[in-house]
Length: 469
Ligand SMILES: [Zn+2]
Image 1 (cartoon, rainbow, N blue to C red):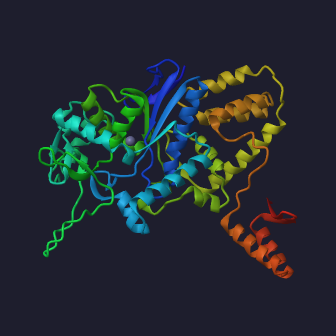
Image 2 (cartoon, rainbow, N blue to C red):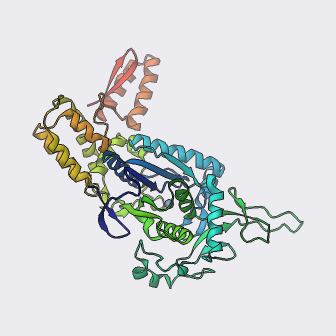
Image 3 (spheres, rainbow, N blue to C red):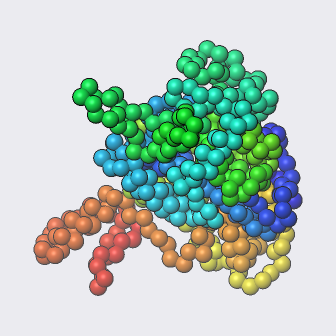
């Protein structure tokens, strides 16, 4: 029996899918205006574990992940600049180029972390029509109103608005102190926004759009007319999850920061439109903290997977580091803990080789492992259990590699992959140059420099070979 903690009911529940042996899974994807930081990536590792546990339990998982490439403003509360357009200005590229570049970077991050790809990737800009139709449906049902900057969802029209985050009890009062502008209620949110246009030039130039990404929609225009605009952030997930998974579907996931605004508003839109639940289980991963604070692009404590590689930490060591803490607990980042994780992972990979190969009666190990992973993904205990089993030499290689289907730690790695820190790579490059110039003194000096950084270089026919000391 698989139990999962459901944010909606605030308790662990047995997982009962809508269709036997199948699980529909929607995970909110990245806003592709910059690199993902390792705090963002913690959420995707948790979701990957969930998916692997479902598969390990025999479910076929239909996994859909969106790419937000329009409409996510710098403030989650529909204010500020579109993050994509801001990224474009920052890098002197088009918003479309920015989206493509950071989408590829994100997919590379997933690959490096051994995260299984979703069955369906869907981009917000590829689903404008579905989003317009959904906004239209909500308008027809009386859930929306117009302001001078777009179409808004009236949250008071929905009796149970805010149920996911328990907003009724906690935040509505606080909201009363906020400057509403033209919004009727503090929690109302944008479904569609008009493109801002430049002022008409006195000599008669036509006003130009201030945006690169915009589409014609029938909102805020006369009968049979259209006006240029773009979707709000939340509407894409409601439109695309319904398209690919139907409504309701089984499990909806994201980071814990999605609870009060993004997921709350997805639920409002979808349930108002279709009069049925959006998803049956809602699961959320906790934050990664740096010096007790949340890691955020705006907070200047921005660490990417590349940063880790530059310091010689492999992405899988980061994965191992994450697996040691339950996904619903906050986790403190530290370089020391990462180093320790790298050492532990290496040791685990080495242990695999020394375990007995052939079948032995070790099914009770599997039972215990299953018990942990099926108890709301208790991977920390499953990992501790594995170490215990290895210590007692009672587990076969076959069983451990079977467990790795859930852990995704590449325990079958025949050859150790060395991550070369940038500092070492730079010296290696300089040493190669010295050797081409037959400057042996410099070459030897640089070898000593590399040794100081705990690496050793060997000169082979294929070139310089690096080993960790
Ligand atoms: Zn979403």
